[in-house]
Length: 150
Image (cartoon, rainbow, N blue to C red; front, side, top):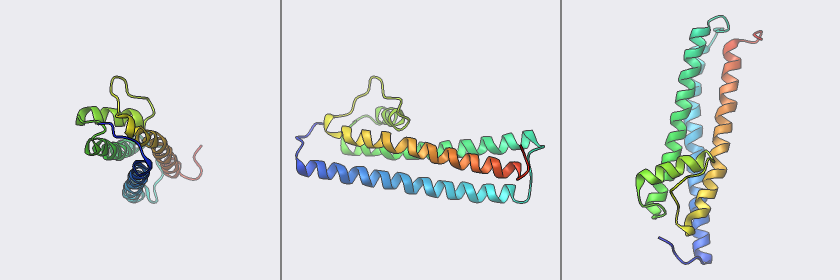
């Protein structure tokens, strides 16, 4: 569905972009708080530098938890694409959102012209969330290995 682009439509798209970005950031912050609480309890007072398998299991579960948070955020954008009529098929919307969030670029799925700004905004927000997750993961790996680990 393509609509005629006018000033009111641009303003509405800007509001949608900001709302989706805020929802993404808030959901990511909540997910990180939950993961942080769980991890802090798990590693408190322990040093895993000599326990390679345990460290690998904790890191793997953390990466999976972070991936689940990203998938939830991707679903937020995909749902918006379908709800707005930008991409009518939910499967295509999910694929498009994954590709846009990760900045890979969707192949074979296109978005209605009037909604391209939303996709551009998603490709701006997605890498920021991934970078935030990466910083979070590095922080906990360092804490898990202890202050004197190399």
